[in-house]
Length: 539
Image 1 (cartoon, rainbow, N blue to C red):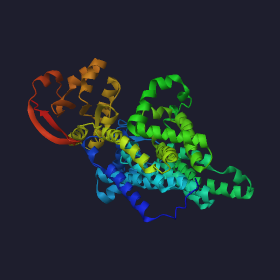
Image 2 (cartoon, one colour):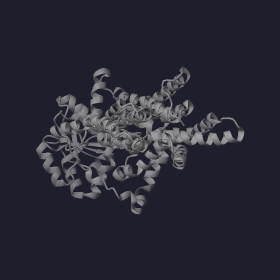
Image 3 (cartoon, rainbow, N blue to C red):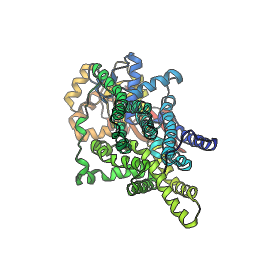
Image 4 (cartoon, helix red, strand yellow):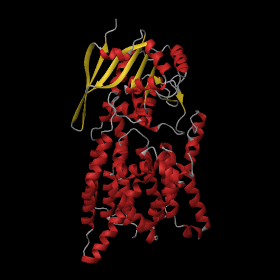
């Protein structure tokens, strides 16, 4: 296949591309404010916390998160050795749309939609076939991994957009030899690196695509091209220097990089099912996983040509990427996001091959029918995956946070025992919260910060404390009483305890009295959940 001339575009494919982008936009903005009812993943709460604290302190460099280092005098953090671009996006959206969730998410949604256009341009250049390019763009529009994480307040959406934009510019350089594309490509990948370092892996597939033999024929030209290639990455050097200067260049999680783990049987025995579920059940569905594998196999058989080298490059990149991020792939499905472009283009390649086999039999092109058949088969699995991620909610966090904000002053600290997703309570309350591991630490922080409130989310964590550390539980009961409890459809959701008169909480639960107040109604895909709070009367 010869590279396409991107200037020879007529209005019909552009109209179809526009419709595909609208579809992608609709899927991504569906119930855009939905997480306000209690769903936030931990990353979103991190970046929201940073944004809120930046706005409060007017310090736009230091990172502060409500649920990290909560019991330090200056609760700053040094996670992620890159600037918090997502927090800056949130502040930018708040300045335009006000402090809400849908505006903050809209920036990433737009990155997701623009990515559809870039994938179309890459596929058009590689296939020289408008139909296959549109199909590649359509796949990115509906791919569950792309849909869900294009709307979350995480660095994935922006990082992916600039990553594939960099790929597009490199491919344009390869097909045209115009060196200014190297500048654009390097700057794009540099920005992708600033969003999240994992996206810089996209430089490796390009190395498979470069016509190295042609470059070596003219040494002087090779040197000029090398300079144009390297120059834009000076931007990364300056960024690192700035991060070091402001004290934000620190790799706290470097110990998690275990490059040989993926080659051990124990790793796959322990994490194989999880990674497989992420790939098949959540990110790509088994339909597009098979079509992707067929395209990759086809590329390895053919090998020659820019399309085949590009697919092979991305497939081989899976190995070093898995080696570096082995301890991340087994815990976070969004770490597969750099390979979305590979999935879309390799799937289209597999579809093209199947249609060519039909063409040999019936002597007519059946490409559109093969595409349609694949999409029809995939629809129930795509819908199931997207809806499953949308209904993964943690109810009651918003209400618990609002109550704690009401009970406390802005500088108060709070004890919070919860799982990682429950830290959203701290973000809703805009109070620093954490949980000491030992009773001694608890007493120390309680005295130092004059802490008066404890929150257990979910409520069962209170009873688990009794089992794990009876002395810890006994101290809490002797010094705290029930201030508020939350119920979702008559099921206990959270406890808030207040320091003062102690009480036997289990006995109190048997004879509760007080005002039951309806606080919110959750609507989740046609189902309704009522959250009530009860504040017992204190003698």
